[in-house]
Length: 227
Image (cartoon, rainbow, N blue to C red; front, side, top):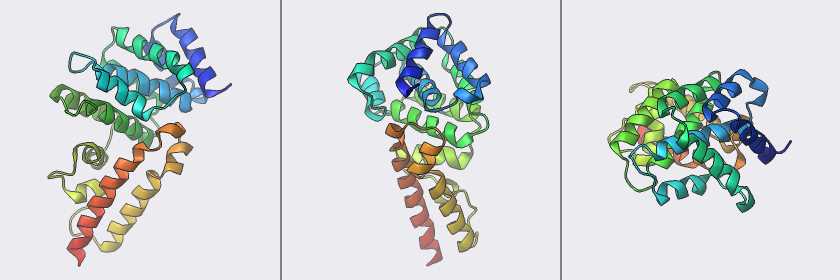
């Protein structure tokens, strides 16, 4: 069954129950945890995030399509999942808990999901306070580490005053060898091949680019302390 066939099968089930209960089903059926599961979870959370500031703007909807590319003939399926999530009375907090259960043994995948949600939140050029609250809420539900959260924040909102050591995940004063080892580990985890291996749709692997840019910038800043 192709990727879009699996999406269509999910929509067929959605006519019988809410999208939220389908997310619960994905959490109990590990064999179905693939790129379709990732995409459905992402579409659902994006829809909830887009309503966080009280309105859904064209910019926010376009932002979703900007990083989640799909054939025009499949647009109806994506739009349907988006609408089902927005119509569901369950709130954002319930959805993030459900998605957390789907990928509870793969925290890096949840980091991928949160990265996409950051993209949605800043799509209109403004990081609305309520959206930032929801992002922090998602990070907590996903059990995202402080370094991982700050890497994502820096990728979308700029490094600002964030400590480069925090972004790399090392303490100031660590040996240069430990700093380099931490950097190499991050580079492996966020390489496009690594994302595809853990079920992230190929169209979404570019989400790692901003993350790696933030990691590289922080690493370069740290290296200046060793010169």
